[in-house]
Amino acid sequence: MTERERSDRYWESVTDFDVYSLTYGSLPDITRNVHLIVLGTVTSLQDGEIKPFEGKRPRQTRFGVVRIDEVLRGTPQVKLAGTILVADLGLVTTTDEDLPNDGVILFLMNYAQMRSDAGFAPSSDPDDGYYYARPNGYQGVLRNLDGLVDLVDGPPDWEVHFGPYPAQLDGDPFDAVLDRVRALGRA
Image (cartoon, rainbow, N blue to C red; front, side, top):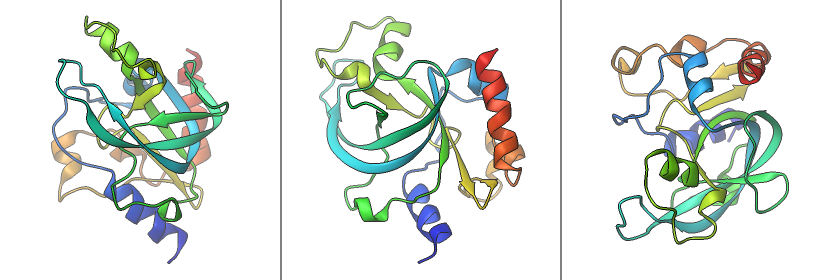
């Protein structure tokens, strides 16, 4: 299996194109509105649970342990130096051997901050502040494959239904997009 095939298989398995309340129309829009942006790599998986905002029963998840190569915006809340935990970055059948080696820009929301922003009481889980999630299933990851931004393909005409971001970045030089995110993150 090539690295591209491994990356496609992995990211396709953890990407969905459902309708979300948090969606973004442009790179500046998502950069302004997420809590954390990192350049990193998913290095391993860790099983855990998330406590929903509404007091419902906890749900099981697979966290991706993401090695932080560079913080582009925000201050990461970390349990293990140099890594963050991102929910829903693995299926039950996904193993560490399935993880791609490609670097990605991840746009993330922090669970504890989302609770606070929405007016919910803090979670009883003391680790809640360490947990991150993509703001939706398809806009929070920009992959670097062969030096170009490579998006996970969605259903037919997905760009029409979900808007221009991030479709307009597909195929752009990754380093140029990374520099844009750096500049936007400092603004």
